[in-house]
Amino acid sequence: MKEKEDLKLKERVGLKIYYDGECGFCRNTVYSIKNKFLLPEAQIYPAQDKKDTEADMKKYNSWVVIDYKGNKYYKFEAVIYVTSLSPRFFFLSHFFKLGLIRFLGEKIYEKVAENRSLISSSTKCSISRK
Image (cartoon, rainbow, N blue to C red; front, side, top):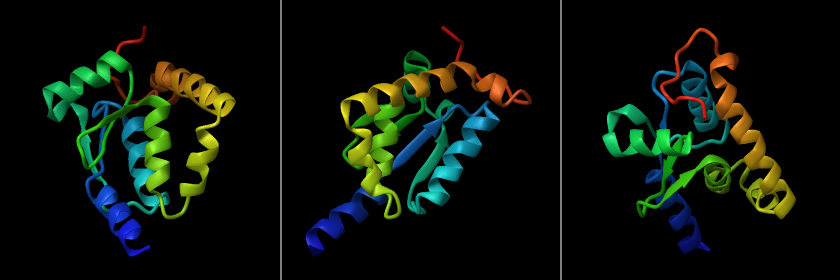
């Protein structure tokens, strides 16, 4: 049990979340996740801070989540991963992995990503719409 708790802590400490730094909605969302999911160890950065992360953000039209091993997650898969680390909401990650829920989660994520400029009309997003 102790080893499992140590691994979860290691995963939370190594969690890096990159968002579109030119999008106020994106910034507010990742900081809200950090606080509400009880992930104070999460490191949050604008994707524009690193060229490769910015390129990934634009390529996938997504936030970029990197785990403690350097694996990258995008879109709803990133939501599932971050949720799995939450002491408060970890149980939802199993539900989110179910076929239909995962499918719907991806579709909802993509719609929000495509329309976040409208959601946060007072900010600019550097990811172009497809």
